[in-house]
Image 1 (cartoon, rainbow, N blue to C red):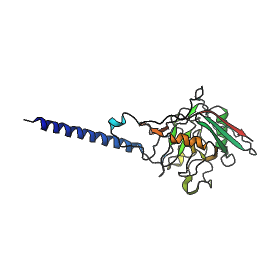
Image 2 (cartoon, rainbow, N blue to C red):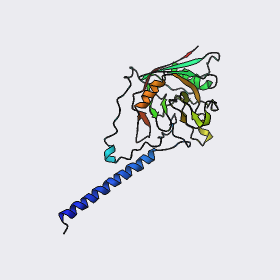
Image 3 (cartoon, rainbow, N blue to C red):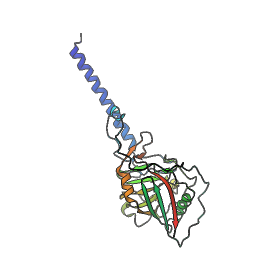
Image 4 (cartoon, helix red, strand yellow):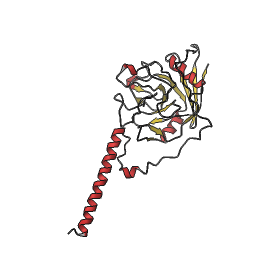
Length: 273
C-alpha cells in the first residue's frame, strides 16, 4: 500500500516531468522559428516570399509562462491618420518617366515622425521610377511598416499595404546597383534604403523580384549584396532609433517580427528638383 508521503513524492515527480516536457517543446518551437537566410540574418523577402525570423528570438520559457505574453513598452507613436491602405494593382512596371537631370527626394510622414530620403535615380532608375509612381498613386499612404529586425541586422521594413509581408503592386523590378561601392564587406551601412525581394540565395529565377517593399537600415547590417540600394536616409534617423528602442514581437505562425510601435506611413511623397 502506497503511503501519503510516497504519493506526494510521485505526484511531484510527475509534475516536474510535465514541466520539463513543456520547456523542451517551447525550445523546439523557438528553434523552428529561427531561420537564417543566405548565411546572414534575415530580411524577410517581399511579394509573397516566406517569412524568416532572426536568430535568438526564442526566450526558452515554458508554454505556461509564454501564454501570458511578453510585456511591451509604451507605444512611442501617434495614432494613424484616417484612411485605408491601398488595394491597387498594376499588370506591369510603370513606364520610365524620370527626369535624368533632376535630383529626387522622398518624405515619409509616419505616425512616429518624418523620415527624409535622397533617391539614387542615376544608379537605380527602375526602382526610383517605381517608388515615385507608387507614391504618386497613394500606394504607400496608410500602410503599416510591418517588420522590425533588431538582432544581427537592424532594419525597418515597409511598403506593403497588406502589412503581411506578402503584398505586391502586381509587377516586379530588376535588381539594380548591387555593386554599389558603399556596400563594402557585405555590409549595408546605416542610412541605406534598399528593396526587399524574393531572391532565395540560390536560384537565378528568383532574381529581379523586387516590388514595393523596402527597408530602412538604422544601424550597419551585414547582408549579402542582393538587395537594390536606391537611396539614403537624410533625416529621421532619430525616428528609426525610437521605433527600434520599442522593440518587436515575433509572431509564432509566420515568424514575422512586427514592431511594437505603431508605425504607419500616413503619407509618402516624392519630389524632383
